[in-house]
Amino acid sequence: MTAVPSRSAADSTPSENQAARLLRLLAEPNAYARRAEGIVQVIVPRKGVPLVRGQFPMAALAPLLSSGALRCDQVAGAPRFRLTPEGQQAAFRDAAGPDAFGDQHRLLVPVVDAEGGRVKRNLREDPLAMLARQEGGRFAIDSAGREAGERLRRDIEMAGLPPKVTINWDRLVVDGAAPGTGLTMSEMQAEARRRVQKAMVAVGPDFAGPLMDLCGLNRSVGEIEQGLGLPVRSGKVVLALGLRALARHYGLSEVAVGAARQAIRHWGTPDSRPDFPRTA
Image 1 (cartoon, helix red, strand yellow):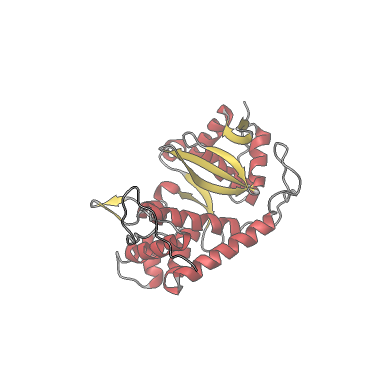
Image 2 (cartoon, rainbow, N blue to C red):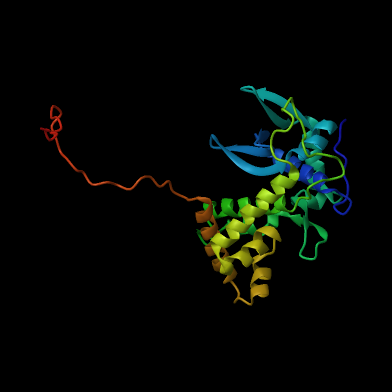
């Protein structure tokens, strides 16, 4: 049986942490990974619509491919990466951890806390996910706000990657990709930092701090309220408004918006023709 090597969060390299998160996302039903402009995207179809659930550097594929956790299928001439049965088992074991009985009700991933230490966080108690839960018949944030928060989180994670890890993953080639295509990890890191900076400028100073606490440090609403000196239960309002501003910056909306309605300039019968002025 092929297994993905398991290491503690403190001993894991950034590349291994990315591979572990990629493994977890690919364990979702019908999920697959694809290459896109020098990165790896995880796609999860929902109601026939392919949704991007995460973005990773190309280096995250290597440990999963070498361990046999991934297989590569060709679909319309493009490679798609899916979990093998061994990969599914590895994802289950990774989610279970040493406390398998308790951890079967948790979804644990390694994250960096405010002091820079590595800890495990239960994604079933993820602050952003909890904001999207229904309470009293209403949602604290809509799906556009949730996706905006997830997008900011992905950029923050990408911006925190080092330009190099122990192995030279700068130009990873998978399935015959041309050498030199895509961005290096340092270039992706710089691009992600620029996107984060633009997003923070767009939402303004009132929301930038709370959104970084929520999406970057995974702080709970209560922790954010305490840190900002806000009244109890007011943090949800601040975060909801901030995520709404962030969604506008990303061009995300709950409803489709088309062109504005224009006034009718001319009525005519089916056989009418335009009357152009004659020139001398």
